[in-house]
Length: 537
Ligand code: SF4
Ligand code: SF4
Image 1 (tube, rainbow, N blue to C red):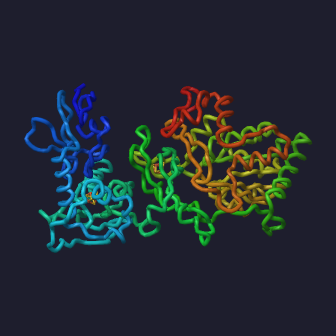
Image 2 (cartoon, rainbow, N blue to C red; image 1 turned 90 degrees about the vertical axis):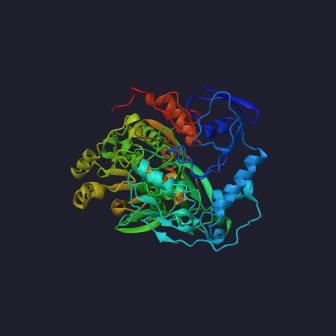
Image 3 (spheres, protein in one colour; image 1 turned 180 degrees about the vertical axis):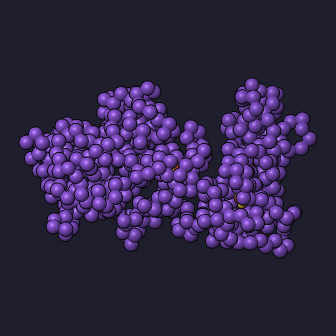
């Protein structure tokens, strides 16, 4: 473990630590473009220059390993002059695009120019022209003029996806980033190159020109796209929507991966990244009642009273076995726990869970075939997957009520089977966020919040319980599932009084063996594992 002096401070770092990492550890961070902790070291941008005593000239901190006895200066006059000159070089051919560049506001050229540049430009020749606004794949646009040739995108596609689409072509000031002839940037993680491009050379076709980044609000969350549960940030336009003409309120503008060393590191897949659009598609925003095939808008009170009365009548007659409930693997642990408590306290045995209709695609990196964010949460709460049995009971006329959460049963079992199952039912309740074919057979529809609109936790395929935070309020009349269930429970006289998702989790962590000892505090930003051995595989 070498000990070295950085700006007069002694630090001891593990063997193999780069000088750049050691500087960060010593509280003297140095700027960088080409360095990325998840990629190999290229050492080509040259901006991480530092001065090391007894070395004849400035050195790049990303490439050198910290060594015992080194005396390093990160802010000497020579270092500051060196950085300024590197910046001037990098900007010689950079277009003055900032007003129309999507990266403005989160561009490392802008930031470092303000921090280390502020020079009087000496260069007055014509800038080299390169291709602009070229779609290089379904999700990414290239502006080669803005590229500083840091090679992060090249290394990402060589080392992480191993698809090798990018190359640097030509020589000297005509060097140019591009895609190999006949290729497209169309791998499963292509959006990540936009995240790691430090400038506006690679921009996201989906986000381009949608919102200036200084209007974005950010919320920590977890991708609901598959069982991996990649950590993400939800970026919404809340600052813009303070303006009254945007009646809908804040909406998702983009998703970005959030670093979690144990789950997704710095990355996320394209399916998850662009999968947020369901949040605003075919949303259920009102409570609805359907009688004789005609649907009408209703109040929460009216609809909850109606459902509660039916449940009370059946339970009073000891006919709980005529009620079937199908929960969903898209519900949070908190939603599932409240549902379990409510329906079990009513004595309902036909309480089960439906997962996705079929497995999806997967790979050897992040993408899982299980497209549910909370299958392990369902299993940890001891709930079963027997929805087929419940539907069969309904088809045999053994049920009077079916309460379905979110899933499209038609997609899973087909139209005929669902129609046959619900034909004799007195009451079908659908609680969900998006319209699907199961809604068409429901007598009561409760609008529920999507993951971005509520607090809670999902348990990923590694048994890691991870937190989601509410980015913005639910659309229309929608509410978090647990809240709807608690209002329902109140009408049934059940003593369940939780104030928020955290108080539900506290109760869950006390009563459910697999979750024992966990708390929101312990889960923190990177999640915490379920108690091993308490969940069936
Ligand atoms: S496109 Fe961006 S990430 Fe790729 S080499 Fe250029 S600046 Fe670096
Ligand atoms: S791998 Fe799964 S959890 Fe991760 S971003 Fe993709 S869909 Fe979302």
